[in-house]
Length: 235
Length: 273
Ligand SMILES: [Zn+2]
Ligand SMILES: [Zn+2]
Image (cartoon, rainbow over all chains, first blue to last red; front, side, top):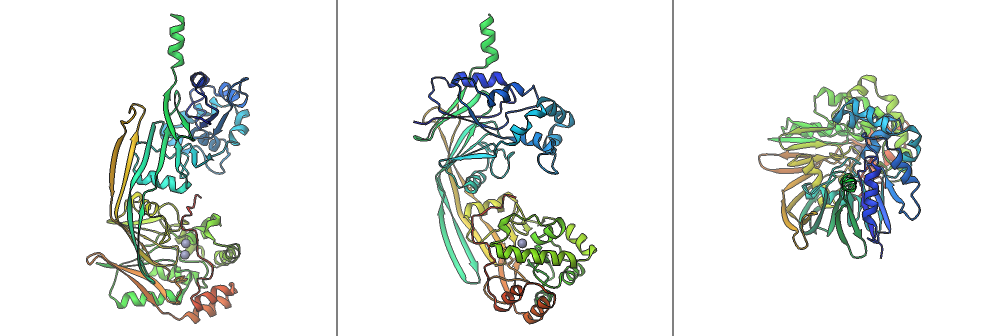
């Protein structure tokens, strides 16, 4: 049976990626989705991006989409028309923009620019934020009406999202609403139920999520911290 | 206090004059306009100037935006290719006719207006191009009202007036986090607020099946919304459309009250522009 691993927010950290891959061994995962934020301003992202493009023998190839950090970089390097990395500039200032530019070699841009916004697999949408915006941060505290709207926009039963960095699942399981319309033809009323749908936050970095689309089983996991594993090794 | 809300004037001077007469006759002195002052119709400058001279607070419509920004509507703004071609013709004609001063006025319009719990937009709070149709998925429609922070949301853009009220709404959910063990999910029920969407219809290009101009009057004290239908001199506008060399279907559909295949049929479509 197919089993997915969903991760995000690697921030260019190859050690974290390898730690997750190691944790995935023996978990019978056959598809690996990387839901954006492959890159970040904190380190040279080349080793990770090259590994994603050229997995080692026997290693899963990650299906990648772009996230908020890629969007900022693509905008700043002119891949988004007139737009620049305004959101990053507003939140963290010019230094952060310059750090991001230094972290990703221009030679890697074509590969990043070719990444998709999201995947729809079976009845699941796999996105970084939501279809409203790549930066749309959905979490366990998000207004359920907003979660339902994001599911409705994609017309899917499961929405996997990563932007908030939180691991969570909100299952909509009951309720309804009455809508009464009056127009020039008269009046009508309709009662509608809440559809059984679910929004899942996959986590970021070492925190990732396993999903079995056949049984709908979810497993929130945290891979062992590579820094601590190394320290223990030297002790 | 009663106030009038108009939308989609579409450069139809005779219709606007008739609606303003109707409002004056009823003694209503607060008017709000939801945009689309121009497009389709033959008198863009006259209509903009009348709105300006009356000092009517106005938000920017999809046509007003496109005239300023150049055509950048996503394909969902037009229900068919034929409609799109005719729409483009009207766009270029209107852009050529409008005075620079009137263009500046359209460019200066805000995307939304707010008065107490009332929020006024052209299409939806998300976009001037999103249609809030009367049969749009109810939770998604309510989300537009709630996310705009409105008790009552006034919109236009569909050219068909309606009042839609959401009641007895609730959402039940089950929350799971990594630390919640098996069977330890928390359950929650959220009651949704009672909210309303009021679509003001269209003064200058009605698509409700009749030839009358439509608009609404909301009386906050009595908590009523009245959909008004106002007959006007349709022939005067039709003659001006043909004299201006605009597509004849724009005149036919005003004369016959046809919906004329120019309405968005997919109630669930969300403009992702
Ligand atoms: Zn309109
Ligand atoms: Zn419009």
